[in-house]
Each structure stands twice: as structure tokens, then as C-alpha cells.
Length: 254
Image (cartoon, one colour):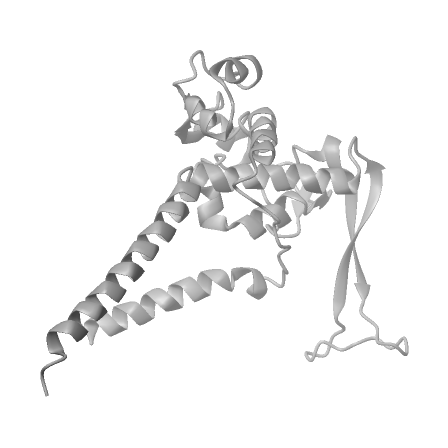
């Protein structure tokens, strides 16, 4: 009974975590990632080092692990090694937790396993969900993380947007009620200053960045899945052989 109750509590916690976005009224966009796409991972690693590693660390990841996504030590040194001297060092940020808390009100979290804790869809929606908000300290807000302390570091790429809420209407033009005495709203964004990338280009860049974050959370995941497939294949053959052996032993028993 204790084991059953513990299992029920675990499942409830998992379901509760998964329902976070729906409880907050935010529909997460699907992240079209592929951790087997080396070009995407290399692009994501470049974005991570250039835009994320200034404030955040990835203290569980070494630079030389980027060899696994097709980069050489020379490429890592020439293009990605900005906060360390050797490719064998950890991916740490120059910003201290004290400075981060003083500047942003909260220390920037380590991103080593952020994709495993938040999920790829959450990250993909979050990085595309910033908008201007003069009521916040940084002047930015996020549709997924309300009043987030992090400023929009990618705003020069995406541009500046403002959030607008419009009443949801039916085919006859009548406002649709939300069942609580109000009117259902739909959130839209209006670009007030374009960025250096188009909308589709920015989405691809974010996709690559999220793809890299997912890979970084478990660099061996592709190998693990491949090994798991072969393990199941071998186990299937062994089960078949054991079944045949059992039939041979018991064929004369009535």
C-alpha cells in the first residue's frame, strides 16, 4: 500500500508540473528540435556562447564536449572560447551570483539542465515571447514568465514588440464570453521596431538554441536511445529462444 501511495504521489507531481502552462493560461508552442542535426547544434552552441554565457553558466559542461557535435579544438578555440583559456575547462560565466542578484534582482540560473527541468516547448515559447513593458524594471516582460527578471538579450535580432489583447469574437462578430462574466481574450503582438532578423529567421535561430540546450542537458541521449533499441532487440530474441526452449522441455508433459 505504501508503494502504491508513493507511486500515486509521484504521478500527481509529474502531472502537476506538466499542467503548469495550462494553469497559467499559456499555450506552449511545439519546439521542432532534432538532437541528431549537427548543423543545428553547432548554430545553437554559437548562439549560446554569444548571448547566454555572458550571464548564465553551464557548469556541468566542458567546452571540449562540443567535439561530439562535430567541432574541432581549433574551431572551439577560435570561435567559442571567450570565458576560458583551455577547451577542457567548464562553461562558466564571468558574472558572479552577487552581481546578478544586484543587477537583475535574482542570480541568473545555471543552464546545464534547464531543458530537462523546463522542457523544450517551454524554452522555445519563452525565448520567442518577450515584449516591451514599461511597468517592469528591465522594460521587458514575457508571455510565459510574467515579470521575469531577465531582459530580452535577443531583442536586436527579434526586434521590439508590444502586447495587445483583443476580444475573441464568433462568426457573427459577437464577443465570446469566458464563462465567468467576462469576455475571452486573444493575445497578439505588434512589432514597433524590426530586428535584424525576419520572424522566420529568428524562429530558426531560437530552434537551434533550444536544440543545443536539450542536447547539453544529456549529451549521450542519442547514443542511449541507439543502445536501448539494440538492447530491446536482443532481449526480444532471447525471449523468443526461451519460449522455444520451454516448449521443447514441456512437449512430452501431459
